[in-house]
Length: 473
Ligand code: NAD
Image (cartoon, rainbow, N blue to C red; front, side, top):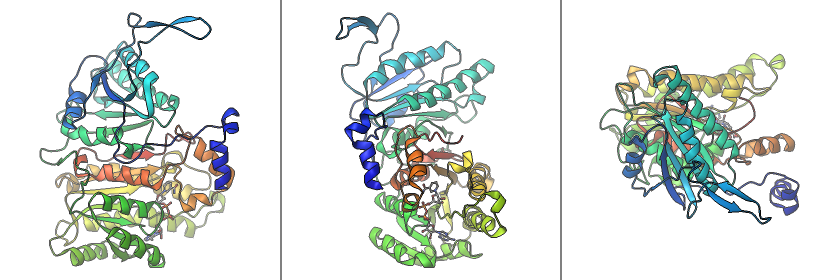
């Protein structure tokens, strides 16, 4: 079947027949090769420029399309038309600061900057618009305009091809705790680099973290010397998460059920981490994780990040769903992580979560959209979205600078996904803006971004890693 997929997506005849061609995505820490151009809408605020400066990225001024800046172009058949003045080379990324956009006319600035840039955008190029949290923008017109920007970005995401992505970052500027360049840096660098390959059409949020909470924003090994716990690490997405944390410097504790022991040991050996055979639904699971950390890494050791990746499905239409299938999914995917968090958040517990620590849940696009035959799974995954939103505001986290976020993967090419019937699989893989499935690496990169020491100003959010999946909501 894999060969058939390959044939369908790469065969020249398939291309002529209009079968969408999957582009090779830029991944890892690679930056765009073309120019990073910066523009603005509604004025010339400095937040984006100062952030790019902090990241050490050379930027150029974006061209703006107006009736006065257009040039005449003659096509092969001798027809002449007015087109935006072209960029001299390719554009790797266009970053627009739209935080000052408050009037409907300001949206025209956004169009004016995006039009020429999109014509020159390279494969796997980036469109990043930075706006305000709409409800903090002022009166109804300003709120409408900031909300309108979301419509633009989500539509551009659907128009882009060749692996390019478009995302919106919302910041706070008109509140008591305005977002600073230091707060925004990790999110901008994630979006510009290949780490965000499978994130498109999304709205990300960056608030403000207390002075000193954000550390080193440009490190390639942000988890150096930190302990990270990953559940369900014996295979699939969890194994990839463990590998990426190890790549980025972490000492990883890989957790999985005893039955998954062989895969777990292999993962732990490969990455130089430690394996902990544990069913996360055990009542003492949190204490056993903490005890493992204290024992393996010394008395003073604490956890920097815990990733709740372990998850199961027990699919049935609700009319056929018994309490066992219902309960087991909610227990593994939601209740277990609530219990483990409560234990690890005890500041007195040896081997518990450190100050400035991170909690990351793994939700699913099913948690947003629902799915036929998955009421139990959708309940658990929507539950994770609510859980991180609510926990983020709790004093037991805020007082210690601990953040909590989630990722919601869409269609990810894992062994499990490979078993889904061919037609369903093909639909899922094609019906997203990037016209392909994501990889476990894409999910892992998003998790590492959210839990990076540099992402202290990002909390309570669920980031979809789904290539802008068009199935469901
Ligand atoms: P997978 O089944 O390949 O791996 C899940 C791992 O969790 C397994 O190693 C399993 O042994 C472990 N696990 C299950 N129950 C456990 C328990 N009680 N205690 C400890 N470990 C346990 O699944 P995957 O595709 O890698 O998915 C990983 C996560 O991503 C899950 O939460 C899943 O719901 C979510 N997700 C996956 C996709 C996808 O396309 N694969 C899409 C959206 C969300």
